[in-house]
Image (cartoon, rainbow, N blue to C red; front, side, top):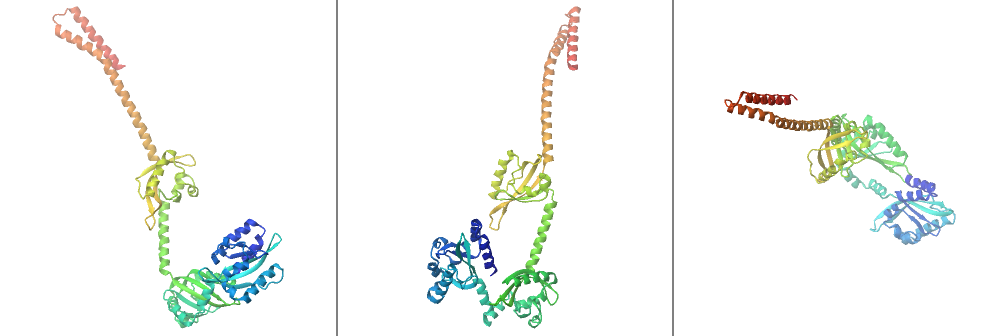
Length: 475
């Protein structure tokens, strides 16, 4: 009912704003049919198409009374109801007091498969550009009807339901007094059937969860809601605490009086322990990731960064939130981007690339070098859904390698210079040694035949060549 009244208020508020009015019609979960003064259907929104399984294009512009039998086939057989409905709709445009206007009515409709659905409808009028339109706002209450029927099933069906060992079921009066419970509920609570009859539903709830339960209960009751669900703890008779998933259903009378409360309890203690263990494991892994000295990250198929640990903030000198707005390669140096693209494609093919390097330029202009080890990520069906990697900052190592490379180049140049110098020296020393060897050989071979004058002249040549070579070495 609240949904229909809310739609009524929105229709009146937005009727003069065409864009917002159309937006409301498109997004409304409730069926909205608008009829003009000529009884032609001007609006038949998406929710109405789903409810009736009749496309809008097959309906718009047609006379409402001609279309009505498609939606309400039983109307043709009930001439009295057809006459009343027709009279009330016509009275809307004749400005008389219609019997159905602004009143909730319940109808049964059939779809193409002849499956019956129950709807709750509200008929209102709206004024647009000085014209009056009839608006029928409807809500599918088939599930609600089915639930009501289930609750009122005979004792045999109720016993079948209660013998379900998987779900605990209890029924209580509006004040919370338990008057019936199945075996599973008795097992969960730890009380006997007779002991439960002396308790209220709230008595079973753990003290730490009572306030949440009370607030949800009162809110649902105040809004005439049908149900609410909650994960909570119950305290058994022996003091043991169990985690349960509860679904609390309200049974209302036709006069909107609360008649009964039905509670479904599912023991999720094992599941809760598993969830707690998983959270603890995730907490430990996150702690390890955040305390690691290397960047740990993951990349989606569309090259977006889906996770970075906090090390990335320090290395890239930018908040993680800013990093995850872009593709993983947006800070990469242009010379590495093509190589990165090739590696990404290999990961999508399920191949694990070898360890590799990329260079990046931070927003502050600093050049950093990272060494990567990356593995593809697979889903349960062995499909690649992205990649996860570890990146280590090797900027200092790369700079040291570059310095070492520069030193090697300098050393090679020195060696070349040395070799050139030795070659020059060797060439220049040949002439003095040729003189020394030539004249000394001549003296040794012809010593007795040479005159003293020739001997002195040869010795002078030897002395000159020796001094010349000595001076060359000194230079």
